[in-house]
Structure formats: C-alpha cells, structure tokens
Image (cartoon, rainbow over all chains, first blue to last red):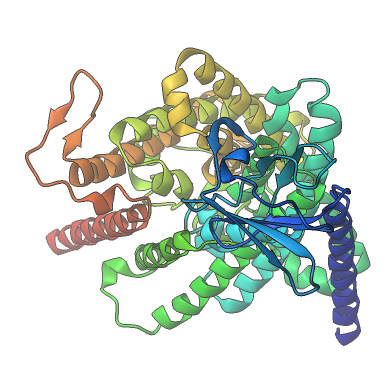
Length: 322
Length: 233
C-alpha cells in the first residue's frame, strides 16, 4: 500500500510538472519583442511598462488610449504618467488611472511614439496565464463551490457524508472520474461537436462519456487492483448520479476553455466536492451524538447544517483573486 | 436467462429502503401507484432524491412548477421507453442504457422549451440539462420501470413526476411568500401578501434551511399521525 501511494504521488507530481511546463510555455510565448520588455498590472489602478531604452520626455497622459479587449467602446485615459526605474535599472513607465482596473480582463493600450523613430504601438496587457489558471482552480474550489454555492450534487453529498472514511473515498473517486471525463469531453467537444455544429448533442455525448469512464475505471480497477476496488468500487456507480459530473463539461463548453483550463476546472470542482464532503462528514459524525429533536434526526438536520456551510461559503464571494 | 433487472439497487444510500418491497412484482393499483409517488414516497421529502433543484431552483412557485413539468415529462417518457425495451437490455450495461435514454429525452425537452418557452428556459438555465443526472429518474428506472409492464410504469412515473412537482411548488410557495411577499408574481393571478419581505429566503442558501425544516415538519406530522393511529386501536 505504501508503495502504491508513492506511485500515485509520483504520477500526480509528474502531472503537475507537465501542467506547469505547458502553462509556462504559453505564458512566455506571448512576448512582444521590440523595446518593450515587460507589461503588467501594477497596483489596482496602474499599468507598468518596462522598456529597454529611455522613453522621450513630455508625453501627455491623453495621448494614451486604454480599453478592455471585450469592450472596445469604453475608452480610458491615464490620469498621470510617471517615469522611474525598476530593480535592474531598466526605465519604467507607470500609467495611473482614476478608477481601479478590472484586471481579470485583457486591456489594450494604444501608446504614442515612446522612443523616437519607432512610431506608435499597440500593447495587450493581461494577467499572467498561470495566475489565470490558479484563479480558475480557486474559484471552483471555494468561491463557486459546486455544493455550497451552486447547489449541485446534493443527493450524493447527503448520501455519502455520514462517515469520514466514506466521504473521503467518494471525494477522491469523484475527482479522478471528473478529471478523466472532463478531458475526454473536451476532446470530443473540440474535435467533433464544434466543427460539425452538433451542440445540441452535448448532453447525450457528455453523459455517455461519463458512463463510459465509470464503466472503464470499474473494469480496469477490478482486474488491476482488487484491494483498491474493494474500498472504492462502491462509489463508482454513484458518480453518474451526481449533477456536478455533467455540469462541469457543460460549463467548459460554454466558456470555450482550452485543455489546461479544463483540467484546472475539473480539479477545482472535484476538490471542492471533496472539501465539502470532508467538512460535512466531520459535522455529521458529531451530530450522531448530539441531542436533536426526534423529527430533525438524519437528513433534516443535515440540510440545516449544509445551509450554515452555504452561509459561511458566501463569505468567499468577496475574495479577490490575483 | 438473466434479465436486465434484479441487480443490486442503483443507489447505495437507498439500499435499505428499496430492496425488499420493490424486487417483487407490482401489486398496487394505478391510483395507489400515483398516490405513493405524491405522498408516502414523495421524491423530495421522503426519498430525499433530486435535492439539487429543490434547493437551487425553488425561489418562486413558477420556477418550481416549470422545472417540475420538465422533470415530469422526462420521467414519464424515460420510464415508458425502458419498460418497453426492458427485455433487450443486457444487465451489465443497464446503467449506461438508462443514462443515455434519459439524456435523449432531456435533449428533446430542452429543445422544445428553448423553442416554445424561451423566457422560462432562460430562467432555468443549466438546470434543464442537469435533469439528466437527477437521481430520482434513474432510481425509478432501476427499481420499477425495468421490471414492470409499460402501463404500470406509466402510472408510477406519473406519480413520481407529480410528487416532484408538488414538492417543488410547496418549497417555492414558502420561499416566495416569505422572501418576496408575493405568490405567482408576474402571472395574471399574482397575489400580493401584506407581509414584510424577508430577503434571506430569496438568497439561495436559504433553500437548505427551508428544505431541512420542511422535512422535519413532515416527519413530525407523520409521527403525530402514527401516534394517533396506535392510540385509537
């Protein structure tokens, strides 16, 4: 079992390494070249440009035009421009705005001629891709937790949260099936459904893929690792009855996520379900011993507890992700 | 030959409740089948299945009713389909067969609603598509439709569909009454109730509290009823 655990951990590690490398590659591939070395958001109302050559003096703030990429009608101008240097003594240009910027959207900066002889330039300023991936993960884990803020998967949630051991088993199996079926749904959606305009088949195809995954995991696990199957096999069939498993592919298709974003979405949703199950099972083990009115025993008190968790999770809605 | 049914119950949580009574052939009349779905085995308050829409979609009576109607049709059509083809389903692939049958009917209902009732469709959003994963429908297919005749399955499905609709409307009634002070707002028969609206009940998380308290309330009524019956005897 110890050996097994080490194998799984190394697989998980290799997977995260892969995600990291691909994400890093995507992140660096968006380099502009030229004399702009870096462009990023500074404070909540700042855009910082780092240049390789000193920019010319007397640039008026009005000569810059900034807008959000998906909203090109609303133009903004910086209220003031400051020149400075960063740690490596590269010249920087800080554009300050009167109001905070919505940093989750890509901003397009139309700049005038900064260095003599180069002409005006257009720049796209976006948050780093890795941060975006992490934000998808955290958003689905906490802020939009599928159980406590989207109210999905409740049947299985109530059915398997009586014991801590059952709850963690269900959560782990669910996360694995979620990950596999989300990746398969992404492949089918991107390469078959979208090119042939078969959007109306989404529900049938996605749930079919889930059933297929569950059946495959069931068969493989039964042969390859019977011990693991004995402890986790009973949860497999419950996975299909969980609304989250179909909500995630639909959400992915609506938002046109790419593969890595889909993986982060699936991990966030699965992890959120695991977290919810674990929290709830802890409470319900205590509730078994508590003096509760007769008619509230069992499910009714569990629902009231879930309501309190949901209230607590409302607090995460104020969380601002980098 | 092994038939498509008679395997282990689909839902682990429901094992205790269902295996003894439902593995044998149906002896209930049509009226009893319907009454069972609405009252003694109500999908929301008694079986505690399909809780996601009961919490997420029950902010008003109208929302509850619309989703209830959608679920009703999906349940009836899927039960009938499975009941008709039950002899051709191999037991090992019965669960995927149920899921694909339900998914087909959900797609049909989804397209019909999008075409004829776009406003209600926009209101319900993703929940229509999620009917495919509602445990109640799969559970009825596994425990009833794949063993019984199409006509019995039809009445069982009607009972369960009506029971679900009834539960949704009752929860929606309480939440709309207390949260907005209206009943059936936006329809010709809207009623204004002169109470101070308590915003908490419109907040989605209140769904958990309302469902929990109502379940306890029904348990209490049942206990009182049984108590009265035993003391009379």
